[in-house]
Every structure is written in C-alpha cells, then in structure tokens.
Image (cartoon, rainbow, N blue to C red; front, side, top):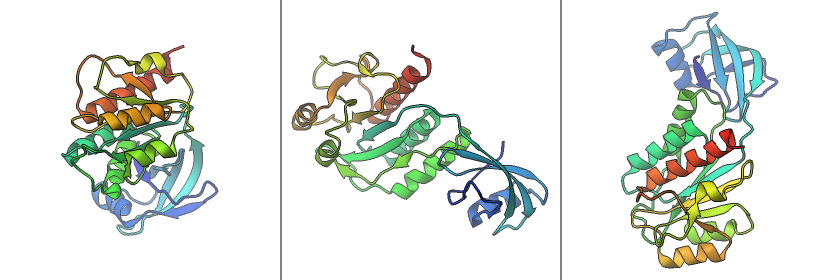
Length: 238
C-alpha cells in the first residue's frame, strides 16, 4: 500500500493536489504516472483511494475515488513524558508509540529534566513517518512542552491518571489498575526520576502511583512499556 499524507483533504473532496514533498516522492522517487492508484491518509482517521491525473513533481494532482474510515475503537491514550537528554531517544519513543497505538503525547519539563527545548515539528515528522509505516490513518497529537506542575493541575479532574516512578515499590502494576476502554494518562519521568515533591503533588492531585515492572527502565523504554500495556489491555483482555 502506497500511503501519502494529506492533512487538508476533505471527506467530500473529488480531487486534491499533493504538497511538494509528497509530489516529489510519488513522481521522482516512486516514478508513478498518470492512471496509477495510490492511497491517502488525513491523520484524522480516514483512508482515501485516489488516482493520479497529473504526475507533476511539485504538484501531483489526484482524483479521489473513495473514502473509508479507519477501524479504531481504542480509548484515548495520553502519555506525558520527560524529554530525554539525547533527542534521538525521544524520537524513537514517538516512532514506536505511534506504531503501537497512542492518541496524545505531551513532553513535560521536570526538576531533573536535562532537555527543556523541544522542536515539536520534528517530532511530528517522526510520527507521520511512523503512521505511514504502520498503515494507520490517525496521527497522534503532539503538544508543546509544559511544566509538570502545570500539566498535573490542568488534568486534575481526569479519573484514570497514573504516575510511574521509582521512589518506592508500593505501586501496583499498570495492568492491575487500568480499566479497559477508558481514557488514560500516564506520567513518565526523566532520567533520575521525578523529584519527591513532584510525586507527592501528582498523588495529591488524583494521579495513582504505578509500577511498570521490576526492572529499572530508561525514560523512553518506560513510555513504550506503558503504551504497549495499555494497548494490550484494550485489544485482548476481557
């Protein structure tokens, strides 16, 4: 399946022109011509079947043949994660979480965060590539970085909220506390973990402490374990 990202397409559209990046990929890289069939995704959950009517390297024109909604009944999965010092590791998390299935990602700036400047547009490009690679039509929302205290305050009314930390071993595993088919938020801390004050604030503000297993995990690994656990619960557990 040849997928091209067209975020501005309308479900009722009869034609569309690919942007310059996607046009170049279609015509110059894949050498597609007039009459060739391709598939479009809008990042909002819809697949489109299309036919090339004008194979131009800068503005490839298409005729829309049909539109079909993605079969996605998963609840909203939101992971708020501290940016890693090595930006490649954060991008790796974005890539894999998108492939597995995630709705929203928020970088959170904590007391022990070593990286505090985040380029959201670069993370979005990673997510777009992962969405296409995994044959999905829904792009996760990637928010601007926010201070953890503000994030906790803004989500204090959400019921299914968790914080994964290493301060003690008293939290139950996420799989024991997560309720199937309910929206969920999971906080993942930086290298060095959340501070004691951040943990206490989160717990005081309705976030339940959880474990992600006996191993001590890197930030990006913890994010993937949480993402996979939530998807596993919603797809297979009864």
